[in-house]
Length: 374
Image (cartoon, rainbow, N blue to C red; front, side, top):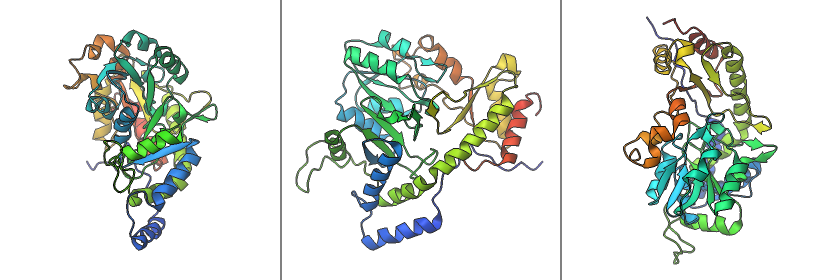
C-alpha cells in the first residue's frame, strides 16, 4: 500500500529566496561575512525591539550561550536543574566542570518544580538553571525568591520561549540571563544560531569578549574566550525570518486550537491549554498518553503514527538523568524524579509548524482519536 504524504514534527521558517538573494548580494559586495558585520548588528537591534529586552548577544548555535552564561557569571560547584530537557542544558553544566543536581518537574508546565529546589541546595550550590519547557513559563517569581534567599544566580534555558510574554512582559528578562536557540526546528531560526539575553551594558560587553576569543582589540585579549560569533549569512536569514515570524506563530496557534478541540473528548489523551495572561509561541504541541485510559501505550501510538508517515517525537524521552554520563548522580535516581519519569514515558509532541494543512491535521487527529485502528 502506498504511504500517505510525509508529515514531519517541525518545518523550518525559511527566508523568501528573493529577499535572501538581495541581502546576500549586499554581503558579497561588502566582502564582510562575519565578525560583527552590519547585518549582525542590525539583527541584534531588531531582536531587542521585538523581544522587549535591553541587550542581546548573538551566537552561532544555541548551546554556546549556555556555556558562556555559566562562564560569564563565574558559576562554580553545583547547579540545580531539570532532567526534562534537551541534553544541551545539562551538558553545558558538565562542560564547565560543574555538577548538575536534578530536581523533579511540575506536571502543570513541565518546568522545574520550585517546591523541590530548596531541598536540593547545599553549601556548594551557586546557580539554578530552569527551562521554559515547550515555551511555557516556569514559576519565575518563586524561583527568584529562592535564589535571592540563598544568594544564587538564575540562568533560564529559554530555547523554546522566543517571544513568550507574561502579563505583557518578556519572560526573557527574568533571572540573571536567558538563552535562546535559533535552530531550524525553532519558531524563529537562523538555520543554526542562538543568543544570550543580558540586562546591562557592562555584561553585554563581557559576553561579546567571551564569544570572540576574549579579544578587546587587535592586540589585547581580556578573557579566555571561545569562537561563538554569528556570521552575516545567518544574520541575514534571521532578519528576513523576523519579518514573518508573527504570521508563523498565528498559523501554529490555529493548529493548536484545532488539536485541542478535536482531542479534548479522547479519553486518555491529555494536553496543555494556554496559560492565563501568557502570549504563547506554540513552539510544540505535546500530548500525554495515559495507556490505561487510552487503550494503547505511548510507544504504540508513536509507531502507529510513524507507520502512517506522521513523524512525531517523544520529546523529552529518555530523561537526561538516565544517560550514562549522569545516571550515577544521586539526584538522577528515578525515585527522586517521579513526575519527570512518568511524563517522559507518556509524552508525544505532535507535528506543530506553520505549514500544516487542514488535511494534515485531519489525518493526525483521526489516527489519535481511534486508538484501536491500525
